[in-house]
Image (cartoon, rainbow, N blue to C red; front, side, top):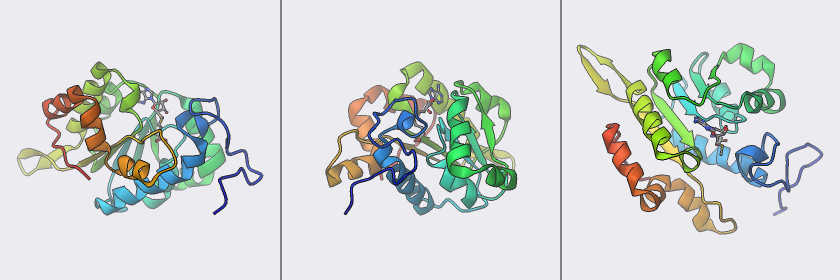
Length: 211
Ligand SMILES: C[S@@+](CC[C@H](N)C(=O)[O-])C[C@H]1O[C@@H](n2cnc3c(N)ncnc32)[C@H](O)[C@@H]1O
């Protein structure tokens, strides 16, 4: 198989993660398609359907949003992102303004979990892909608690948590199949790495399941 190349488009191939290019900023540009495909497949395997609402925490340049926005019904995709330029580039270079007009995603340009609390929207699914490895525990706690509350809704007179939260981290090591599996096993990897995060999860009332 051919190694990834730019194929005449400026796909950032060869740049380092974090470089100021919309694809490189969020991870290795060579894996931009792969992370999107894996996450989208995982979400649909977990039951994501077109009528569900989804919160994408730290949506970046819409690496996954560019698959989710066309898939979901109008107004069902919500992205939070402090770096507005990433979303702008994602729309300009991946998604297109026409799809934004048709699907009407909502973007919150903020780094604070408070925006989700104030939006008073309840979601069926939440996604945090490659976010918490970069955050301190305070911020992780804030996000977990905000996401947890936003996955609740009223069923009759009872407030119940019914949504699903997919939290994924990817291995930065490349070149072996186990790295892909490590990505799919984000929970386990996280728990091994940072036990504190597990107690934050239970404090936020989020039940953990391994994939
Ligand atoms: C490694 S990138 C991942 C982006 C996207 N989730 C993806 O998988 O393509 C991390 C993202 O988190 C965003 N971010 C940084 N601080 C944040 C915060 N406090 N809350 C939410 N997102 C944040 C960054 O701007 C960046 O877009």
